[in-house]
Image 1 (cartoon, rainbow, N blue to C red):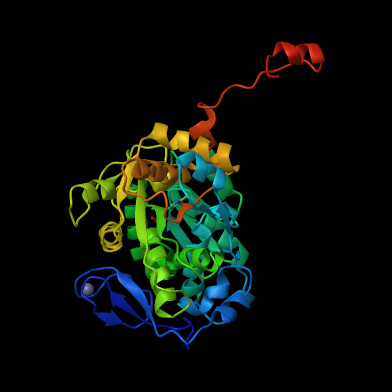
Image 2 (cartoon, rainbow, N blue to C red):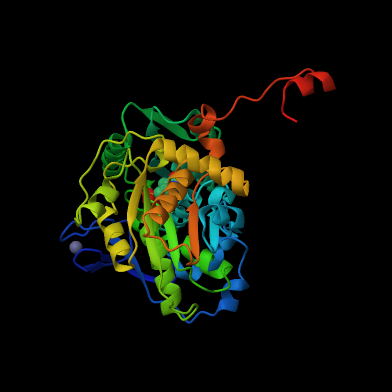
Length: 409
Ligand SMILES: *Cc1c(COP(=O)(O)O)cnc(C)c1O
Ligand SMILES: [Zn+2]
């Protein structure tokens, strides 16, 4: 066991070339993305169940040091898996669950990936935690760096939601608004990563470690179902990493014998205003042509998704699909989830539920099969998206007469 736990090396997702663990993210031979590989120990369900009530219960399955749970981290994970019977009834489904990642420390699934990136970055001697972000990552990086006592440098598009600007700035790191879209911000980050050797850009130069954090969503879903896999899972797509890693998490649990390999279908969700992966899926292509994003789902607005081709592989291998929904459908689904289950999702959650509804209507998702949808973020961070769509509440004087006149009885 090393400072990266049971991780053994990095391996190229394209050509399979391997190299030692370190701050590498692209294959020296073909420039393909690198992925962490492991030699897992024998592991039982009770080993995991005896762990802390956060994602470090799965530490042995991640590229992090053995004592990670004792270090200062934001302790993400173990978010609720909510049985959504009202929503299932509304959709004519038999058994539906919402994996609700609002419960994380900065209210999105990004705390998971940042926690792994930070742990690995510190092991590799980086001094600063940095990122280009569509918003939620900014929150997670700024908070995690504050907790670890190191500097953060966060770059976001200047037109980001006000809520996400405040919920990043409050942590006190270096915070820069870039006049451009996410893909412009990402390019600037890559240039900065080349100039500052001790800056770990979580989703650029330590991306192989970062991406592994999303496996914990898959682990938790299985454990919370009583060590079973769902038949269908619907996952939002920005870069596509989350989707591929939920699948990787399921595969690892099955190969370690922690769950029965009952098979599963992975479905991907995008907003129509930024749907390059959905377009490639529909066209039967293996490559993803970049687009210029225009959608209210800003946390998913990556026009050139790094993991796009691997999303297509995953979805096709598991017999799933990718689809996209309009901004109106996103808002409608945010309201449906709130009204049926009391869950206020951010726009990404509206995308995921919207795509579930679309694929049900198209007969591509089976209403009788057990299904999990991921709500990756919190509606409190995207208030403007729904504000205009909600009915205006009547204002009354504090008298019975005035209340009666309002006609709400
Ligand atoms: C970043 C993000 C995603 C997608 O993440 P990828 O791994 O880049 O596909 C989904 N939902 C929310 C709320 C996000 O912030
Ligand atoms: Zn390669």
